[in-house]
Each structure stands twice: as structure tokens, then as C-alpha cells.
Image 1 (tube, rainbow, N blue to C red):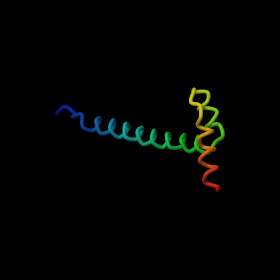
Image 2 (image 1 turned 180 degrees about the vertical axis):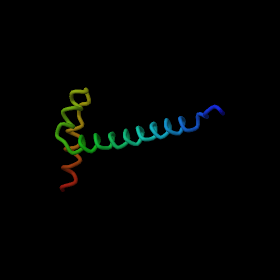
Image 3 (image 1 turned 90 degrees about the horizontal axis):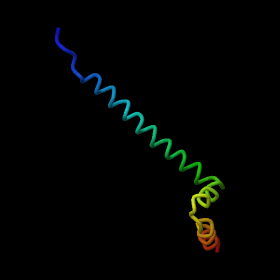
Image 4 (image 1 turned 60 degrees about the horizontal axis):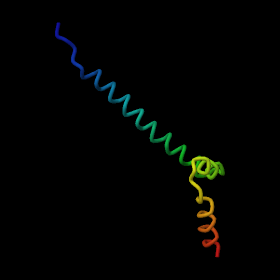
Length: 66
């Protein structure tokens, strides 16, 4: 009886890793979309110490309306 090769196991591992990578990309996009369309976006940035984003967006929006 010949020993089994690692090819089927490696293929399953590769498919699993590939699936997790694709799932991670979709999860990152979903998080980006939710944060981009939410008012919590500004609060979370201010909690993280990134100040001035709200004011910069307000400046851009006010110049577009004119």
C-alpha cells in the first residue's frame, strides 16, 4: 500500500485559507460601508484621537453647495 500524498490535505488547507481571505475582504468592506454611512463615524474617530475630520468634511460640503 502506497503512502498517501499531502496533495489533498494541502488543497483543503489552501481552499480554507482562500475562503477566509475572501470573507475578510467582504467583512472589511462591510465595516467600511457601515462606518461611512453612520454618524458614529465621527464619534469613533474622536474617541481614537483623530480630531478635525468633522470640520474638514463640513468645509468640503459647504463649498460644494455654493
